[in-house]
Image (cartoon, rainbow, N blue to C red; front, side, top):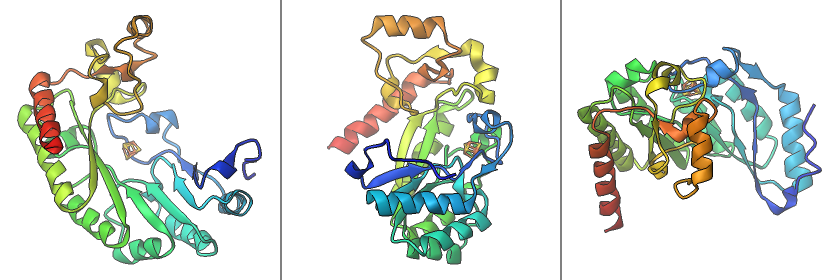
Length: 272
Ligand code: SF4
């Protein structure tokens, strides 16, 4: 059934997020999506999605829809089916997904022509060794070429880079900084974030007893952390129940302070 949006004040917005599928076929060590959905991939019926989009656009004047699926790019036939829906509707849409080598020129062109204006395709690290160690199935040279191809058809292309993995050396961190510049010169929007332990991720499980409180460097982290450095009561709750709040901790990582210094140097440069 399409969701009933009548209780939401949607007329105040022109942008809305929907989910068309849940789960992911990959199993990256820092991510807990696969464990969360028990290795299943659930797809909502296309006619239900179409009815939902029609409801949003016709009844509430929504003009932009973000597809908040865990990995929208994992089924190319599903993208083609979604394109058939949006061809009938005047809509701008955006997606999040894996940098798939199968995202070919003709498919991207069709996505761009039917209103896809933004794609978020995380790279996650600039270090080939770390990519392998976290089971992230990305080949960096291929990924840069794919981002260039996406950029040809889609106006906003974003990626992110994570740092602070448990075995990440300073040199590997520098590879991630180099990746940041490689994205920048390709006009790819890029964010750099401290990798956050997620509750059911393999890395969190492996390093749980070594997690370090991350109450004061929250601003380098991702995943919607709240600033709790001045709230002692909340800090105490988090310290008492780390299993509930692993994302307020960080992994141990070699030369953490030097890495923070490098980032602060980059921030200072960006402000000049
Ligand atoms: S990080 Fe992305 S590709 Fe990897 S398992 Fe999670 S959702 Fe899938």
